[in-house]
Amino acid sequence: AFDLLGVRLVHGWIVEPDSPCARVIGKQSYNQIMDRILQCHDSASRLASLQDRLQTLVVVNDGTMNEQQQQIQQEIGQLQQQAEAAALMKDFLEHSSHQLTIHGLSLLLQKLNDHEVCVLFRNNHYSVLKKNNEHLYMLLTDLGYMETNTIVWERLDMVDGDTEFCDANFKENAPTPVPNHAGPVDVDYALAIHRSLEEQSSPPAADGVLFA
Image (cartoon, rainbow, N blue to C red; front, top):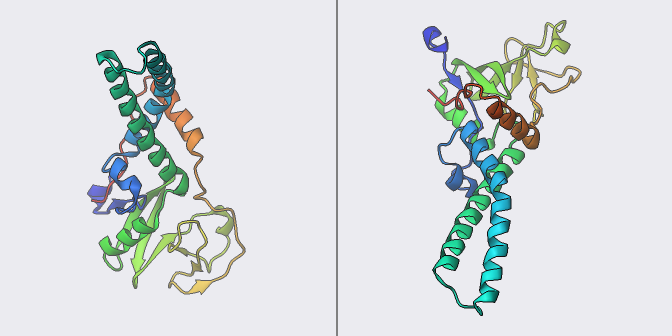
């Protein structure tokens, strides 16, 4: 639908390329990341069992390492690597729970043309986004401002919602605050929902939206 209208669908939930998370996340979608975290959770008991078994075999064999032990040691190493990667991915999700990053904001400013109108996807919400004079603005849709004719745009220059409000001409105003519509997401709750959907064998949700 957005393509038919010639409007880009974008997001700003992008990992910093120089961070440790970038190596393990790569170009994976949100659904793929959640799957990997859940797989790691499911493998935790397997890892503990293998470690106990290896310790027992080492004691029985007087500290020598046979082929079976080497295979167990190799699998333990693989599971530990998976656990470390999953921990990094979960850490990224928890520390960017507003589904917007500084790096993502920077890319939005770079990629969008001045005065361009597009649609921003964030926290399962679609928002009208416009770039105006090297600043990003979201069309304000909070019901708390429905009767406030002087407030039209919300400047998007922070990831935590601490922003400025503007009129139709992008002049700053200071209205009474209302609850932020793009609050943080609880990662453990999101994992539970993701697992529940998989167990119901529902069709997979669309992968994370990407820049056109």
